[in-house]
Image 1 (spheres, rainbow, N blue to C red):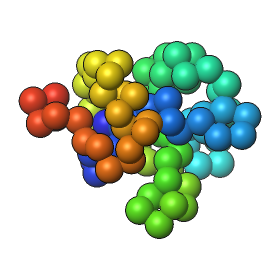
Image 2: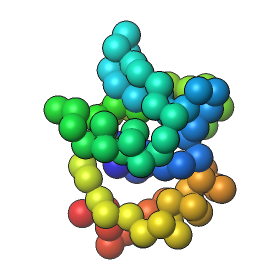
Image 3: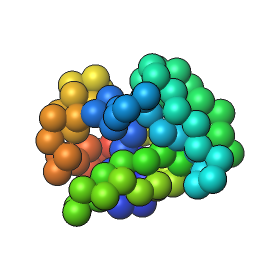
Image 4: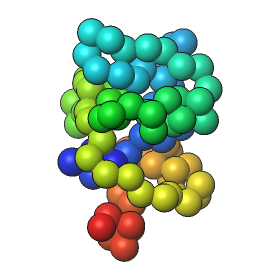
Length: 89
């Protein structure tokens, strides 16, 4: 999860896949599960996602949270959806 409460989810795929990694060192990963594994291996996970204006920018993960698949689907369908507070510890 990023500081702004956004999270990496399946709806972030565009073009060749998911754009992950620090700016200037980004890679494209076609498969969500592989991208998530790659993010977990990074000292600090970075991924691109659209901001409120629809511009794709890079965010850094600040904590990990186990998220139910139904929440990931809800986020992918509705960018304003937020993970329930009990998972935001």
